[in-house]
Image 1 (cartoon, rainbow, N blue to C red):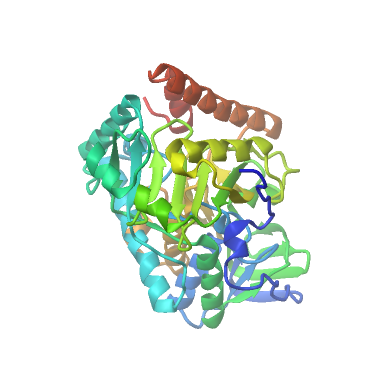
Image 2 (cartoon, one colour):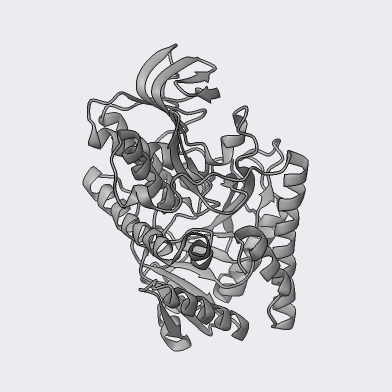
Amino acid sequence: MNGDRRHPLGFWLETCGEELVPRPPLPGDLAVDVAIVGGGFTGLWTAYHLAKAEPGLRVAIVERRVAGFGASGRNGGWASAELTVPTPALAARFGRDAARAMQAALRETVLEIGRVCEAEGIDAHYVRGGSLKVATSSLEADRLRAELEAAAALGVDGRRWLEAEEAAARIGVRGLRGAVFTPDCATVHPARLARGLARVVEGLGVRIFEGTTARGLRPGRVRTDRGTVRADVVVRALEGETGSLRGHERLLLALHIHMGVTEPLPPSFFERVGWGGREALSDARPVFVYAQRTRDDRIALGLARGHPHPGWLTPHYVVPSAARALRATLARLFPEAAGVRIERLWSGYVGAPRDGLPSVGLRGGIAWAGGYFGDGVTASALAGRTLAELILGRSSERTELPWVGHRWRPWEPTPLALTGAGAVFAAMRWADAVERRTGRPSRLLGSVERLLFGLG
């Protein structure tokens, strides 16, 4: 397990199938109909749906590095019908019908991603194998059954409980007590999806200017280090880098996250553990794992533990404890992989809203979307389609979803926000350790959920 490689790009960007040579930067002042700040999933999906709906529309994207360099090229590759904020919290805040509509829109978007990949020739390794949330203790099994009952009470269908034997037939996790299977989930190679979308939207007439840093935006214009872009509508699509814009520092808190990927595993490993359906895998611990089996038979995995981003961290930095935690998690789930090398380690940062709820909107010539809190592959695709409809003045079931027009409560000033977020993640790690040691639910975990999502 020694010799873990830390790499600023990470596995996905390293294996996206193309050289990451930046496109030409903005050549100077420019006038367009829609200016998009950010070349990640949100910006690319917005541009895609605008160009498809109105082929003559002048759309430009400005990107600081290269398309897909940020969270879009560094995540777990889960296209799931889930948001970080739990469905009961959505129902409590907006009503049962609104929560169900949100779930239905996300489920449809999982399928839509696959349809776009097929139609546009994007080889993003899309596999709709569903997801398995496994329990390896009686406490975790009870937690999963309670989640399943809560979803059923809200009318969210499609999920089902698998007893240990049936779950083990899908994937042989050590100590398996059962699992919840959800069909509405796909896995993707996220960097191939982002880079493929960039190529497609260019072919549709969208102009992408890379190596161009936005300094500020206001209605009608984006000020960059290369010139000013004037537009009828300006789209802010920066997620974890939203705070880099003056006046937007307290909208989203950047959280530093880590992932790793193993060396390719031999056929004998999968003969023992299964995973033939290539389901997305997670568990029910407070600091849960998220993993997928890649096309070339590696395991890509991360943990739901973050570090508040103080501004000096970059995607080049890997917190030393992250590597140890990933190795320990891999060995816990799959003893057969205890000696497997983590071949790549990388990091990035995501945007966390103060109330945990993503937002999509358009007001006064400024459109925005983000705050996915790490669950952005599907959410960003839905957000991009919704933004295009809002910009074009078209109503749909998407423009009526509860996150449309949602205004975030700003974070506290930076020192307080960093301290508070750090305390939340420390509490999650503490709750995880307590539950692992005692086998009883942690009261602290409930307090964290109430703080983050307003759960009673």
